[in-house]
Length: 195
Image (cartoon, rainbow, N blue to C red; front, side, top):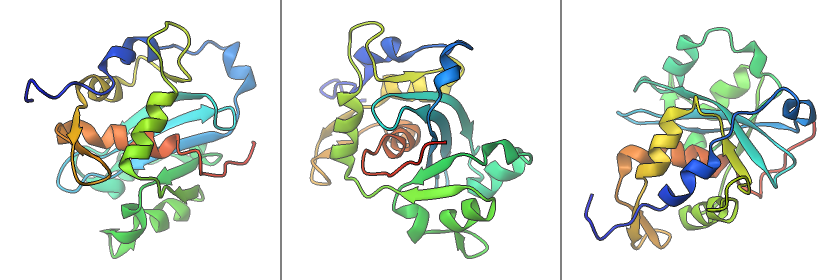
């Protein structure tokens, strides 16, 4: 990475790490996930909870190991426990065929899960994440389980420069899929229903 590009989230990451206790899990709100699929590289599915959109906690991450959504589902055959989740995808989740001519939304809905599509720009999504995090310990409105190592590593490495597309250009594409999945997960325009 060019030294003139500064990591976008690195100063905040350690304050985002939080292991949820059993007591905290009593007040879980809607279950929400964010999914960004890799094309020829590794996509990711993040699963967490929210209290109707002001605070988020990322519980799990699943790496598609470069096999796409179908590979992800085959690796984790018994995903019935996901039923209460709403999975938020980017526009490519509708526009791109990912398996047997079907798009990601079709595949996820065939599993009986709810889907939404995020239409936010990259810039507004990154700004949304930054609005939910802080350098003050214990004050972040996005918290992440320590076991979500890929997301945490990618947040530490993610860097941008000002560019033409949405005002930002990612200069660490290898770190972009999990950050994109997080952007989709925290999109304030997504209407989530209480469980």
